[in-house]
Amino acid sequence: ANMKLLLIFSALLGVSLCLETFVGHQVLRIKTKNEEEVKQLQLLESLEHLELDFWINPSAPALPVDVRIPAVSVQSVKAFLESQGIEYSILIEDLQDVLDKERQDMAESAQRQRSSSFDFGTYHTLDEINKELDHLASEYSFVEKIQIGESYEKRPLYVLKFSTGGSKRPAIWLDAGIHSREWVTQASALWIANKIASDYGTDASITSLLDKMDLFLLPVANPDGFVYTHTSNRMWRKTRSKTPGSICVGVDPNRNWDAGFGGPGASNKPCSDSYHGPRANSEVEVKSVVDFIKNHGNFKAFLTLHSYSQLLMYPYGYKCTRPDDYAELESLGRAAASSIRSLYGTTFQVGTICKTIYQASGGSIDWSYDNGIKYSFAFELRDTGRYGFLLPANQIIPAAQETWLGLKKIMEHVR
Amino acid sequence: RAAAAAVGYLQYRRGGPGRGLELRALRRARRQDIDDVGHKYSLELELEDVLDKGRTVNCTAEVLYHLGSKSTAPDVQATVQGELRSTEEADKEFYNRMRSLQKELVAENIPDSHGNVPPELEPIHLLAWVASGYVIWQNSTENTKFHLAQVKRVKQVKRSDEDLQFDYVLLLHEMVSQEVIPWEVTVLWHPQRGARAPRDRRQPGHA
Image 1 (cartoon, one colour):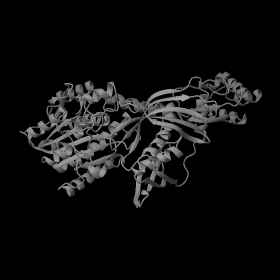
Image 2 (cartoon, rainbow over the protein chains, first blue to last red):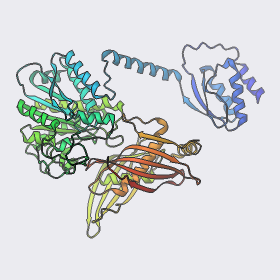
Image 3 (tube, rainbow over the protein chains, first blue to last red):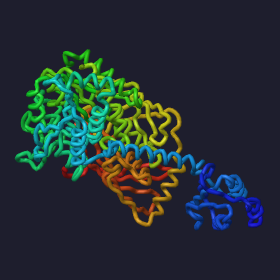
Image 4 (cartoon, rainbow over the protein chains, first blue to last red):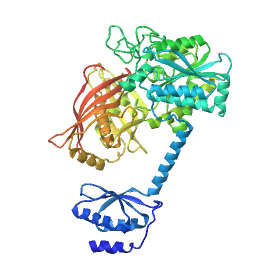
């Protein structure tokens, strides 16, 4: 067998290989069955003129051998392995393709780094998010960071105000992260903020929207809960308020609004993840938004982001009857879902909260709708359960992009 | 919700370290109220093997929730149309790898907070779906919708017989109540015999 080996490869002795590219190089994984085969591979390894590059060297029968083979030798090495009955598979068909793709990825990543030092495609801490809000406010004259209140643990509730002028123009409200474990929502809100800011002046739809209306965006509606998901319990949903007489902490902020408060679909037990709290607006995070919106007096749309389930819902949740504007909201919802689907094929189901997900009292969009804000919608973003709350970071931007199309559709209608 | 129960059952029966089944779409559903028995849901499902995402597999299922009883599992019958992608080689490789480990495998937080699953833990993750599938099937009612939120902890337990054993602490998310419930499940698995969940319990105490 050794003589055969030498005969086959002696023909290649004279070839000099200048390895500037890896076009046609293949990486094989060789599965040896016994010591004899290992020895064959070790002999192959010793033939330096072949310039075989062993990524895993032959050592023992149980371990795979990975080897990069220059283009000129690929066929003869394979012929040799086959003649010896040694099993192999192709790990990489053409190494240059892999390297080219890698270089492209790195260039794109560097490009992203250059254009903005904030990586929207990864999850951030509260401090990092607040820093980026400051950055957006400082970079764009029509973006302002305002504080509408404080959380239970005294963290500021920051809202980005997008306004190109006027005085108390009709406004759109958008919030995210009211349930702190729904991390794709805070992350998407940030991407959306940047999208709106950077596209004003170039995108016809956003420009026309902001020329007539103001937008208020609350990216982290529940900062205490959000910090808690980073420091202690990734699955935390509620606020972090203390309940007298109970060892359990927190109120479900989306059962705490004054809309059918205390009715079916919310719990009166403090330890429950859907505990509605002692009374409506008991949570300062909720009250701050209510006060802000009431004082402003000119909101036309109230939009809120949740995850997961891929749903686009309108009132009601606290009762299972249709709102007066059912036809319009259903139609607008479907149009928005259609826009969402147009990007990556992600399907969102449309309907009232009660029919689509469950009966739930004390919810934010029921309150906004019953207080005269007709265009009240709640989004449940990706996914449908495979990762649930733990959506991989590489899905943040796609989720934000498709959600933005849905929001835009609604905003265009409101305008 | 009935579809979620059916999918749980299917994940238990047909899933493994090399196969995770997901619900892609619920095509059709019909409910029949049977006097003195319960509510029967007839479903047409579209499933997807997460490791074979190119295609969907059709499935018909029947879920019967027994009247009045909150403590018996729904009866589930399910038929998958066509063949699922073979996992024989991957199963064998996983089995041999686990049997030959010097130290018993221990891992936590799969996926991690950012949704990452290290590739070498993917089979353990998929086996957790099998485990959660059993618990979900056994504990589903018309008022629940369960998903596996996270594997909190998994510990391999070496056995003198041929099965692999993994003791899981799973976090199950129940959509209607929004609770995330820790559940301890022991899973026995063998490449030919499939999975069994001989022991499971809701973890006592409350976070």
